[in-house]
Amino acid sequence: MSRKNKIIYWIATIWLALGMLSTGIVQLLKMKEEVDMMTNLGYPGYLLTILGVWKILGVIAVLIPKFPLLKEWAYAGFFFAMSGAVISHLVQGDDAKDFFGPILLLILIFVSWYFRPADRKTISAKL
Image (tube, rainbow, N blue to C red; front, side, top):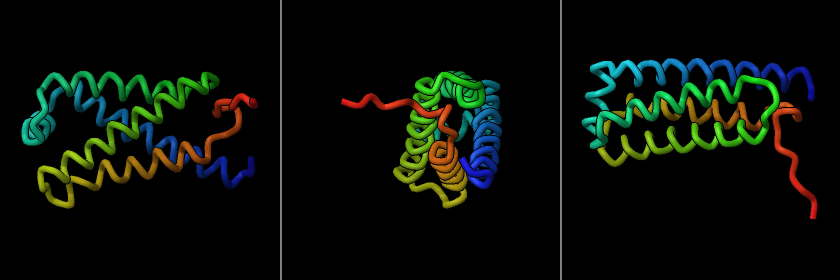
């Protein structure tokens, strides 16, 4: 892996981890703005706890060495959560500002996943 690709990977991964960790904590704390947003989107309040826990666990999975299959699942979970957020805001007809965070995190998910080092990738079986 080239030095440039390593730098891209780590910048995207650190920003992704910070974004997911901070939103996970906010969701676990059930801050008023977050509860109001989930209510507006039509989701129950307890979903904040579920999302918060899984985001924090996903950050740990992406950052720790080894366990490439676990990392794939974490990236997939992040993708499902953020694409679901974009679609939910779209269906509700929310303002463009509500799309910024989830779209930025989707971009970071893709960049981090794409540029991940070989030791963080799963090995495909050859038939």
